[in-house]
Amino acid sequence: MDLSKYSGSGDVPVFNCVIYVSKSDDGGIHARVANLAEFECAAASEREAIMKLVPAFKERVRVLTQSGSEIPWIEPPSPKEPAEQERFVPVHL
Image (cartoon, rainbow, N blue to C red):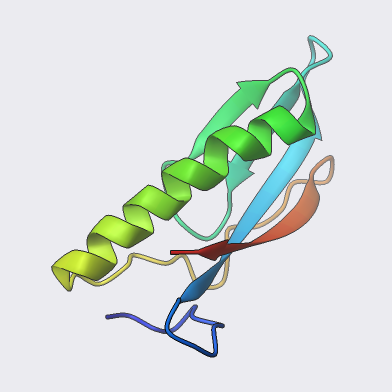
């Protein structure tokens, strides 16, 4: 199991999901995971965007961890664009 992003202290591993959010031209929100590739979405609100991304992040990390595969972390996280704000979400498996 790749524990490089692990921050838990018990039996339940906790991984940090780094999310960048910004306003879209249409007034909605664009969000992307900065430390694990291929996760982004559009949503009406930041809360909705995070609610879409976190379960997908959690499932991918869970599947990779259970299979013993390396988690392809982006380290350091991809650069933040000027209009983006950073959010850290601890994800328990």
